[in-house]
Image 1 (cartoon, helix red, strand yellow):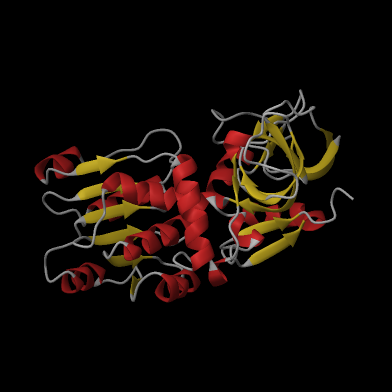
Image 2: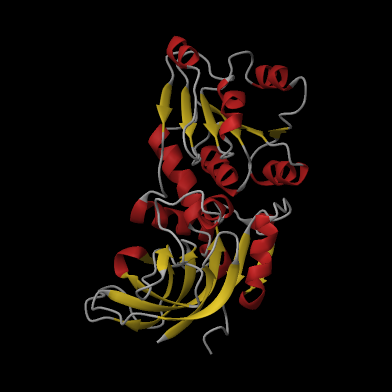
Length: 330
């Protein structure tokens, strides 16, 4: 059994290759992938060799995909051939590192890493399921509620989905985003208060929106550690700080600022597991969480290396990307 996959044998050099797949065990599924979702920030840090604790080269990256079960093991209770599922964490044959193997046309996955996709949820959007799950996990951990005013720095997909979950809980959301396209998307899907952090009067604008009180929750979602201070300046006494991003190496914090304001900090990791996945897929199906025009690029698998080169070169027009694998295993 084989698959077509996006392989990085060296940093920043994507290639399409045909790979052998391991034989599935009794508790595994074989899934024919329709779309795999690209997590731009996390994947870039991996395939550029900055983030090595998850695995090193040669590797197949990507941690979210949607497809159809074509083979089910004898112990895969609750799943059957023909089910449409999302999955994360494909198992690859020896010699190739799975980090986490999502960008491949056919996958061998454990049932614990799969979930059925409800009617009304498109396969394209379902393939991005981890990103809204990350936002939900953070909002749940921080206990964000309708009494909160939440300031989110960064309106990439992680920041935008987090903002949508905050809004759904009744919180008032303020978003800071320098890119005008992402700021416009944020105004459409998250909040009317999508501000340019480069504006000289942005602190005054935040003060006016919050009637001088400041935000009760500050969320850093850029992944740029040099911008942490620009988020923490908005902390008030008794507020919460959520570090929603991953940062390479060490970060520095103004201890006195956190200490004097008695800030509670949260460091969420991952997308919250099976419960969050079910909630995310249901929200995508019923429209409570919207991908919409954030899905800017649908890249056919044979053009995937070029799509990745755009990410490597820092093309800011790529907000959300999925790889279309249909026909790759024919």
